[in-house]
Length: 358
Image (cartoon, rainbow, N blue to C red; front, side):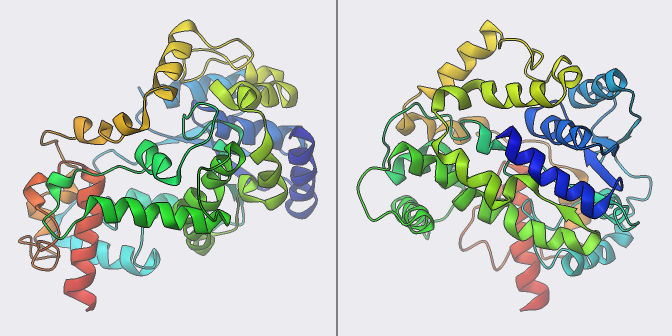
């Protein structure tokens, strides 16, 4: 796996030279990208998203200090000084056009999302770590065979039927997703072999989560997606699960490419040149061996109560761009029961499209 990354990043260096910049967080994938860039002789500009006190920012600062790189920080969740309700309609209309009417979390956001992307249009090449979990056990499922609907229950029940009207059928939802999964990997029926479960992450999840985003991001300047390259992805289907589990193999890849980076602590509570802590191992095993039928209730438990929404999803802002009685979406959603900000954002986005572009 390291050899394949080295070949790819040697190509990047030959084509683009030293003009890269990359995000760094406290996890595996962004650190592996930085390690591969440095191994290829590329010294990138590095940035981190988050509040100055967040663990991501603290870990990223420690990592770059260890290897002698500077890092810039951007807090996209901070309240901007220019959050003026009167300017909100123009901002959302711009989001609609710039992001092609789409965004995995919806169109509604503060201005920082647009501004941070615009900084890419300066001749530098951005790297993106989407689909980096190909080196890990993304679905947190133990070894064995699973039906497609088991995978739906384990990972794709990010919904609460109580937030929907009678138009929603849980069984139809499950069957539709299971059928789409099967088609994505050419499965014709029966349980999935473990290799097929691993294929689902890049070929199903990666397609809807990252593929279109990859196209849209090119509007802001050249961006490369190393973990989405076919020669990187294909061999990961057959990696023994014991190496993917708990990030063991990806941690070792980081250590091979850059031991100094591997020696820095992570968001997981341990450095990547050390064994995972007992606390992390127990948490991992608890997640992996929890029955799939039980995991489908996790989202409902997490979002069973009203939560505080970001300012751009509150009435003073939303009411300037949509009718907040949700005339188009209320036949399908009970908006007073949608307690998840991302879900609310997506429904509001559909309402915005229907009210303004129908």
